[in-house]
Amino acid sequence: MWQEIVFWLCAAGAVGTGIAVFRVDSMARATFALLASFLFGAGTVLLVELTYLGVLVILMMIMEMVIMVVFMVMYMMNPAGLMPMSMLHNQRGSLAIAAGTFALLTAGIYLVDWPTSRAPRPGDPTKALGEALMGPKMLVMIVLGLALFATIVATVVLATNRGRYDRYGDRLERDRPDDPVRGGVGR
Amino acid sequence: MIELTPWWGALLLPPVLAAFAVAAAVFDSALTARAAGAPAPRAAAGAPLRAAGGLLLQQRRRTLAADAPLWRGAGITLAAAGVLASLVTPLGRWAVGDLSVGIVWFNAMEIVAWAAVWLAGWGANSAFGLVGGYRFIAQGLSYELPHMFALTAPAIGAGSLRVADVVSAQDGLWFAVWMPVAFLVFLATVLAMAFRRPFDHPVSRDTAGGVLAELSGVDRLVFLAGRWLLLVSGAGMAVALFLGGGAGPLLPAWLWSVLKTAAVLAALVWAGHRLPTVRMDRFAELAWLVLIPATLLQALFVSIVVI
Image (cartoon, rainbow over all chains, first blue to last red):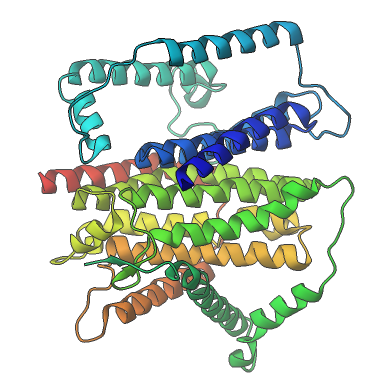
């Protein structure tokens, strides 16, 4: 009983705050409305007893949205909401896409003959999931990890403003890097 | 060994945390008075309570075009985060909540501070406040990864994310003894999380108080209380994860928990008085080049020992 009440509260809250993202004029408010929407989503994940996943969603989303708010305020035309600014663009197109996706997903939920498992639920689903992913798929995971890490390094290399030639000279001849701000490890 | 309290345990948690917070604030005030050469430091002990009373009566300062809901929400969010983070921390044999992923829960709740501090800086529509808010995000990005790896070490050592398991895994030897790097990094990052000196750049004097610049009245009181609660939560978790929780001879478990938490809290407050404020651009380099590798090596060492 209480689970149903909590579920509907989370569902209504997620949709309500999701709508608020596009109704408020301020980037800060929009970002934190989006964060609230994600937290309501995390509530539904917690309801199906995926504790680790639910808490992780809370953790990641707060971190992510606090960093995102910096960029939202930085890039948007009207960060503070002092002048009205619409967040709505291409209304007809997005309406069609949203309605189509909703219809497709709902139809999928009701029309697909979902398989049911006769196997009993494992005592610790998180551990079972971890073993399923990390056991036979270890090679895939290692390659994936490597690719992700290479992407991160490549992104940083591409994005960096000052490379080692700026810091150590064209022939890398300097002993101490020439940095505009001295760092914390004595360089 | 660690059992859940009945439902009213959740009602007892905030007063217990508040008692610790008041004691820490009093100790802090006495240390400040002693450093200032006040004739009777003991008289200064009542200063935090008097200041709290004053803030309750003070009228709110208003700023032009403030974002009131976000601004007022910041203090409440910070205080709630401080209390919720302690939900999984055991006091002796009792814990209010015993989640299977207690350590992750603690981590998630303390990250709420990121949002709260930025909101406090943003909401006032004041340049100094905003500078403080951005400083705290930079600080968060610096301290959070070492903090997470420091949390990982005891979790690996106990083979569980449940705080009760971590406590019972320290029957023979406290984790602080054979994970000293993780323990020290955890304590330092707890100070950073509660933005106490040496990590008080977000509220430092060069920006007229940073995020605290425009906070006044009851909003300021709630925000400062939330900051103390966060520090108390961190100290309590340090006891559970590294100092064996309520383990100890003769005295009952809850008393050991209280004593150890008080000792850690006093050490943190005292350290804040002995260290200068560190600038975030410097600490960021230190965190990423020294603390993260150090905590990773610590986690590797613990993993090898466990295997």
